[in-house]
Every structure is written in C-alpha cells, then in structure tokens.
Length: 301
Image (tube, rainbow, N blue to C red; front, side, top):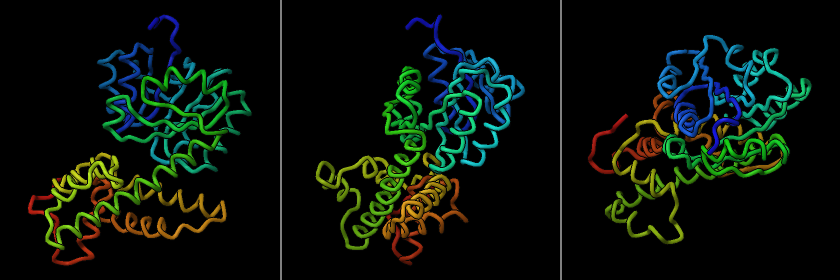
C-alpha cells in the first residue's frame, strides 16, 4: 500500500473498541490523530505513531476523515457540534458508534449544512473483531462517500452499504436484536441441560454444526461454561441497544414481543452487572431459578 497519499484521519473516542480500531489504522500506515476526553487513554497510540493533541479542535482541523466511536447518540451529537467549526469543507465524518436512527439522521443534516459528508457505520464483532480487523461494518450514506471510506473500512473489517444515512444504525439494531435474543436463549439452553441432568458442555458440543450453530453458541456458550463474564460486549451496551431497538420499533409501528422480554432481561442486569460481558444473561436466569447453577467454576469479572 502506498501510504504517501493516504487520507489523514482523526479518531475521536479511544475506548474499549476505539483503541484496537485506531491501532489497526496506524499499523496500515494511515496518518492519525487520536483524541479522547481522558487524554491518557489515547497515549498508547502515540507509541504506534499517532499524534495525540490536547484539544478536539486541534485533532480534527487538519483531518480528511474524522471517525467517532463514542458511547451514545447524545454524546455523538455534542461532540459533532463542538468540532463542527473546526472541520474543513470536504471532510468526511464517519460515526461508528451505536445510536438511534433518528440521531444519525440529525447528525447528517447538521453536517450537510456545512458541506460536510457523513456516514453512519456502526460495527459488530466486539473487541476480538476490532483487534483482528474482522468487524461487520453496517454503513448508511451515499455511494460516493462509501467508496471514499471503503479502503479505511477494509482495514477494520467487512463493510456493507445498507442504505442512506440512518440505515446503518437500523442494520446494527437488527444485529443487536438477534445477538441479545440468542445470548438469552443460549443461557436458557445451558441451564436446561444442567437442570435436566445432561452435561452442558457435552450438549453444546453435540449441537454444534447443526441448525442451532451460531457464533453466540460458540463464543458466549463457552463463556457461560467458563463463567467468564469479563467484559467483551458489555451488558450496558446491550441494554442501551435494546432501548434503541424498542424506540425504532415504536417509530415503525411494530410490536416485538420477544425482543421486549430480552430488553427487560438486560435492563434488569444493569444495577449489578453493567460492565460485565453480555454472557452474564446467565446470571439473571440463575437468579430466577434459585438453586440451579451452571457448573462449579468461580465467576470471573
């Protein structure tokens, strides 16, 4: 790859996902400025060649592409408003956070008023996918802007243009609907095996490769067996996504009865386990079924 003509990227939000995503861009040769509200979190990227300016304005002023990876839609809106006066005409802003569709559309309109292009491009794959560069990237925006960003996306994963601005967030909500529901169902299957006298690990091995096979059964099923609830995809993120799913369903005039139950499950876990991995859905099920516990290993947080 000829790195001399690569666009200059500002990466805003160096957290659990932002750090490995920005690291991959640096290793691919992209000139990168990293900014985080807590500057210390961005400093590890300096060792890979990133500039770590003190201010958001300094970070974005010279960027050709600005990537935001933040906790929620209102934070994205606030950060975009703060950096808007410093963006040069022709900059492409890519929000890879998970937000509501309406929030993505609002940001797109705000940026368009200043001739700034925008893509909403939320991701799925967790920290493991971010580190490996295998994220599923769901993109909403124009064909031209997608083609401009595609080489950058390819460093981080597999991008798919799914529609206009806001459509990326809808696709991510569909993804999270399936993920959350499947995590809950895998937990129920594990506990049923335990209570029914089957070896849960052997049950999981037996059904692998059949119609029940899934990435969730592979990864989170093993996490449940290991009682490993150290954060990957966190409960608080899944709970937030389900709030956004229910809002999107309401906007579309849909009733989603199964998803409503799953949303309630993750909401109930927030008080005690907000930073735990979403495999901790198992703990809610064990609480509901007193005296039934999956395995004998100690919980890991």
